[in-house]
Length: 248
Image 1 (tube, helix red, strand yellow):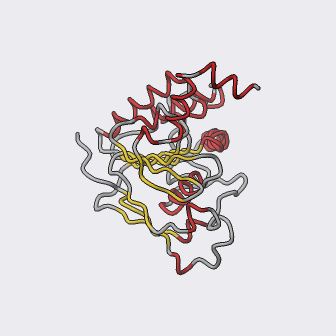
Image 2 (tube, rainbow, N blue to C red):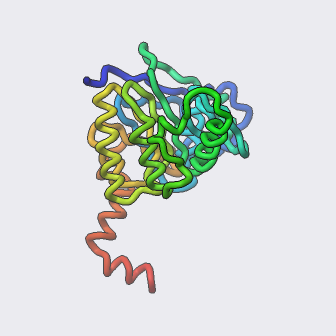
């Protein structure tokens, strides 16, 4: 099945409602001048250095859509320690004509809390066991990488909107390549992805828009123009020279 269009077409910032652009997160360069972002109907990669606001942006998109700030499906409502910004209150999402049948907000930093909540809900014994949708094995009884990948393989399905914050954080390079294959399988089943990543492997997915956030704002760029690609290429091709500079 071919992807027939975006579930989430674009987002815009309601700038007239912002009280001050000197307060977080609007003080970040990426948000100070931001007006709108268009999303690729298949995959949009949001990349950039730490502190540029990419996770803050992704989180706001997810919460504005209706996902729990700490991750999971629309049905999750747990909260361990609220840490999300109020950016979601100042953005407007432009949705496509069709609605996704599935969806998930993945946050690497709060995945432990999600796994704990699944176990708590299953202990209550109300309805079918949730963990069965994640492969049937406790996520806490697996390594982080195994638990992450089990979620991607078992919980994700076709016709879904998947918002992923640094999914590579516990994945080996081999699993990151497998992640590309999984993304492609789901795109062919009419799914859409919005992903923040530092991984040159994952951001290499060919049918995608790459949005690079910098301290000067944001811009659409080609894979070979990303800082992640150029730095990794330079390091691999000139390892001894780079190490000499770093270790002097």
